[in-house]
Amino acid sequence: MTQIIERKRADGSTAYLAQIAVKRKGQWLHRESRTFDRKSTAEAWHIKRMKEIKALGDDLSTLRRKNRTLSTAIDKYLADTNERIGKTKKQVLETIRDEYDISEMNANDIQSADIVDFLRLVSARDGVGSPATVLNYASHLAAVFRIAKPAWGIPLNRLAMTEAMEATKRLGITRKSKSRNRRPTLDELDALLTLFEDKHVRRPSSLPMHRVVGFALFSTRRQEEITRVAWDG
Image 1 (tube, rainbow, N blue to C red):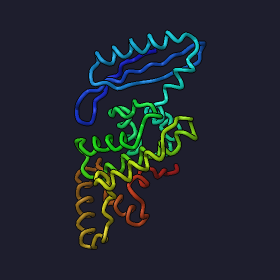
Image 2 (cartoon, rainbow, N blue to C red; image 1 turned 60 degrees about the vertical axis):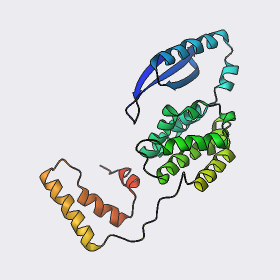
Image 3 (spheres, rainbow, N blue to C red; image 1 turned 90 degrees about the vertical axis):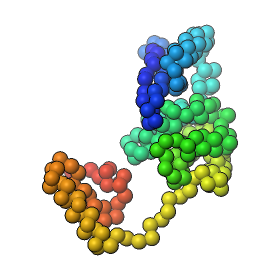
Image 4 (tube, rainbow, N blue to C red; image 1 turned 45 degrees about the vertical axis):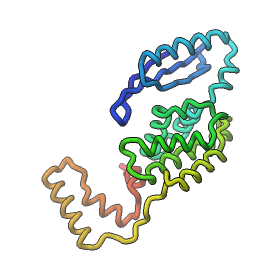
């Protein structure tokens, strides 16, 4: 099975995801994918890659050993932890997989300098407003590096990831977000709650933010924790 899937990137440009899956005797033996800027390039890669796979005959063991890319590790991470990770983390990892060249590098080849270069690209990305956001990308990627080798035998270098995070911190590419130094005053809360309640009265279909704010304050939960709360019944 082969496919070319058209996807829109966050910056409005179009990406073409070329997918290959080999099934024999009812068993999936091999899957891989790559993202390209042009459909013609994606199609050319498809043709070339399928010829290489067919040339191997029935023995795909060599192919499986070579197909240990960062993209493969991210796919496995998302598949194994999908129900336990937040929406933001999932989106970040999918963006890394689909839009950055580092995802197609062989796991053995990824060094700290490659990760630093990748985070520089993230820093220059439209919509990335601060080094704290870049740090989020690095932290989510680090989670994949931590378990790829022991869980799936994909040899991502944890030390390279650690060194890259230290380097980007010193270079100012990443930085923790500033901690809050005060709580909102009662007057500020009153103004916010009044605004949200008035909006909800005018538009009953809008989110009841006056209730969400109150719940957040008294439950001391973060946004992602609140959105994961399940109500019985």
